[in-house]
Length: 317
Image 1 (cartoon, helix red, strand yellow):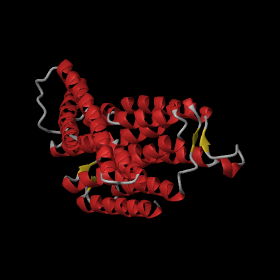
Image 2 (cartoon, rainbow, N blue to C red):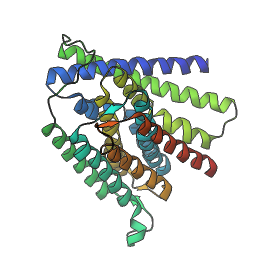
Image 3 (cartoon, rainbow, N blue to C red):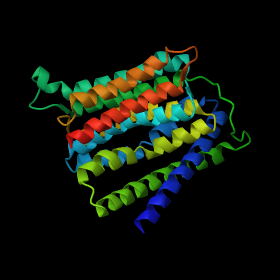
Image 4 (cartoon, rainbow, N blue to C red):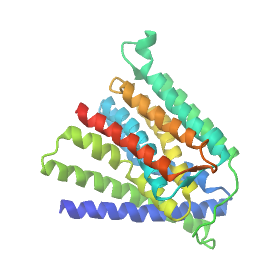
């Protein structure tokens, strides 16, 4: 029964991702927005719902390690594994604005949150490193400015693809909502079923937390990015990841810290370095080669960094 539920969850994830990509690109075409912006907002924020649920629940339970570790782990998984794998399958294109603004913003947001969370003991502010409520308010304000800036500076260009241009806006919205619902429901079913199966075969809770929880909550981003790339909407895939990471850092950690200040004591220098390195690699790929692409060899290198990081984590268990 557990295996059956696991397969049902996986099927819902794939089906939901397909619906979300078709619905989101339909909205983009009808609203006159490019698919990167739709990926950054509807797809990126929507697919971060599992991370939001896990982190808020961790904050309510007073478990900062889950709330913070879930976001840090998911953001690393999003860039290094998901974008790396997507680029390996289909080179991911980016624009000059992505290179000059969107990726640097993601890098700055990541650096800011890590600085706010890890600098208290260094400057003698409080007894431990944590993200406080005033800092959480700052995060939420920055997010509001970010959204305003994104829509104000968005272009109007759509890539060619397989989208049905005759679909009504209302149909596209319903399709995107249904896709998100299937993604979230399928992701939850997959994570719970995989956790039950892992416990049945005697795998430790620590191993489950590091692998299934961190990777499982990112399954919607993985499915959405891969299907978007297969359909020729690789900029939606990039927007999905960048939007998800910014949402995770500013909204999820911000909202969770409003409930209770989140301790960053479990975030090691290696964790912080890898999340910054992942953003730096994205920025670097924007200035390598003759085209604005994350090429296959660059995707392979990102996957190697991801594997090295996970090997380090497993050795620390």
